[in-house]
Length: 228
Image: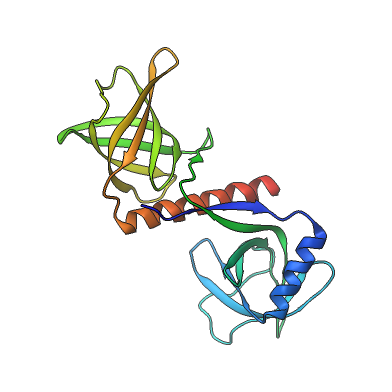
């Protein structure tokens, strides 16, 4: 449970953006587009202009064809560093132009807890408490690969430190992530609620990957929405 989460850092300086995209061109690396169906299209960068437009050569065969005015998430890598930007491809007969907007550096940080937006659907459902079947719905407050904080009504359960829980994490419309954990912290939250600090125990690699991917997608969605 030591995999770092991906944190988005905006690259706002035009000079920094131009230098970075010039490195992308010089490195002769590729840019990968991903649509809402998780289909990918990888293309080679041919040139860059002063308006941050990347002229690219698409592969000859692909299961996805970009359409004008469709919004895509695009990514590339320079050395060990990864970057993400939003683009609306302009499709020509022999090449595709990718206008680069909202460019982000993806930074990996260990033990980083991501605070859930108040209007985002994030639920922590306790199905087993000390190996006994139950059903307690909690609102998720923050999440990392190490643990989480959740809010629960005081009337729902009598909880103690070191209680064992088996739960499902529901993030948006994604498939639930099954976790096992231990309650390490209990504190009051207002008059009628408690905040539980849960430390994950025996988190399988696929579940850890699901948490990392879900939080990465959530940040991308929120940043692009805010930037737009």
